[in-house]
Length: 287
Image (cartoon, rainbow, N blue to C red; front, side):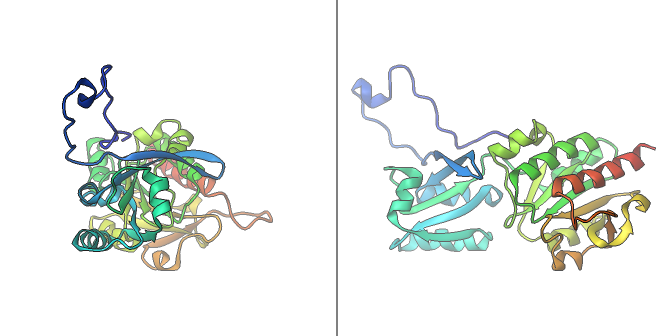
């Protein structure tokens, strides 16, 4: 999962070809810049690809692309092609000044086009079903709706690995992505639990239903999770602790379940609530 196919190649001890008096060959595609950005006090590693050919190539695998940056004033067929392709794939396009582009990739020849790419690979939905089939088990999937804290995502991945979850689904927007912080918080689980990133969660839920998966949502008004029927293929949708599961997603699920509470707080941390739900499925399936 952590493979980075865009990682720059190491130079030889003698330097590049031009150092030895031979003309240096032009590379066929640009390699990404890599920078450390701070998020909530934690240093993250972010990769970028730049130049028309590299950005167009990256957009052929849209799940890995977080955002496309276009330098102000950049026009022509190349820029139009990148913009159209990004929007077609549901990827955000942001117009920024030249100084921002230079902050991202330095003095590299970028043609005014830069794409931010995920440092970790995402799985396909089919990979999740394949994993369940290989283990001879009914699919057990966790869908995260609006979980934006990377530490929560990492913790959820850790519990998912411990409880036999076959895959986690996250939305492309309003969600933490797979980063170095998530990897660290997962204590290695990021390598073992497939994470699928989808553009539209409601459409994804309909796809799951069509394949026989019963989809549950979490809400204050629902069936007590201790009485939850967890038999058969299932997916559980977890929201964040602030807003919970979004209204449109709630309307798409088959049934709502709740975690009863008797104290003064109105909600649990997303990773704690997810852990309770995952362990309930694990407990029932282990009986």
